[in-house]
Image (tube, rainbow, N blue to C red; front, side, top):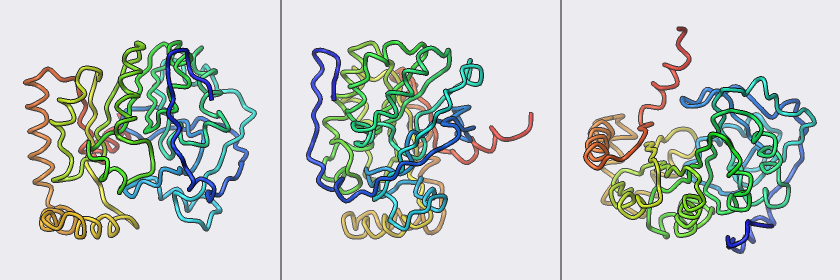
Length: 294
């Protein structure tokens, strides 16, 4: 693994990767249409992710694979001979990635994302890259060549223990170092505060600590559905019993009052402090608005 001169990469021990199921899959095209509110197309160099985030919405993708393994314990490495279409992406918004972290630890070995970036730097598109990994610093030479780029790094806590309870990705400290290094190298940085856990995520504390090197903040609430809903609720009961009533109100009774109030609070705080931001709390409504015929 190489990085631009002067940038140090920390590679933690990742013994759990030895038990991951790896499989190479051939695909016809790396680029797919996106239903995400802020992107026209999405590119997923992999399917699956070793971060093992307990709240991962992308676990629904398992049913489209032939894997019997649990989500978070397998990864498909995409192989595609078809070049990325410059004509298709010209002037469009492109997101890396929606059902994986494009800089997950296997990127160090396969370099799928780096190969994709080499194609994208010649295309005049709006590129958004989202990651939890310091590995993105390896490609800072290519990132500097992108014409219209934002890099978002997910941070929803400053508590390393809570982070470790939720995922196996880079530590919070390393994520903040990554954002700062990107900022110092002229890359437009976004701190993606996602997902916000009620009563746990302190958005003001995170902003105060990071505003020097963050250009924009994105906010997204915790959505609980499917197989991971009960897991998260059980975790709250055991680790944060004082929050059980609040989570029951939101996720069992379906009361949106907490999110409505927090949304207003965030808007007022960001306006008061001139903080550039996007609120993705109402994701479903944003998607429906995008898909609505014009």
